[in-house]
Image (cartoon, rainbow, N blue to C red; front, side, top):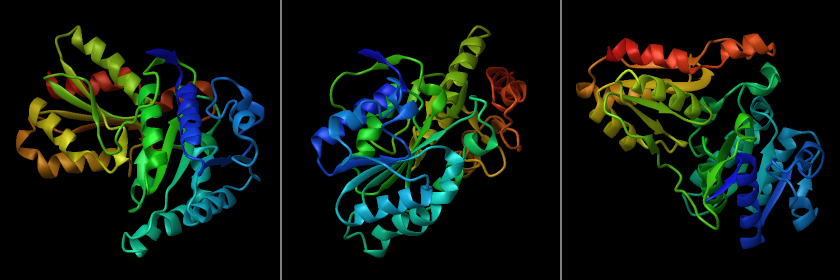
Length: 326
């Protein structure tokens, strides 16, 4: 195992896939210069290795970037484009939602339209509401897209390689807060299947379903609850679409209790989909009401104290677990 950050793991995945397949290319705003010249950023060094023909610096236009990706995919290439911040996806959504997501369906499944849209997401950097809002539920509501949201560097590398090789459009969310903290990542080439959740910690008393940066919050809460005799099972979805329904149902059947943790706002959040799944297909196994721990229904504040208030924490999760276990 190597100890690298998620940003470095993503960089390895991009470099390895570009060496493997000459049809893979990158495009985005300043992806080879500026902040991207930091060794922990995902496109560090790629311009120097692959040149401007395969690492393309684009105009500041998410609509143009998305249009480039769709057109290149139609012509047989495998574009990996970057949308700098999650809320900017709204500017790219026409090309992605109304075209990329529907093309394979319109072809009757006979044609492939491979593309990856990498999107930085997550609060915690003081960037404010126009840069930090988590909108994964918006994207998961669109049939024809695959939605990936890893919480560890190892998962990010394996899932991104699978996304690049996939013949469907994949939206790949990267929480910026995970770019800077080293964790174990296998060396060499490996992939992780899209659509397969992972039990990060087995437990018997309650299931916590989560993804992305909130995985760390779940581990902190589980450690504290373990000292009080409450055994938490942590299920990391990793992929929101397609959803690993079987993993969720099996875990709820085992523990009989469910808490859903995500950083996105509560109303209309993807946690509601998980709650509905458990209510529809595992209701008879539930010993207590389903609980959600989420951000409040407000824009992300830029003030550091208010931003800390906004982001769900382990104390909120501990309280939610205790409310249905004790």
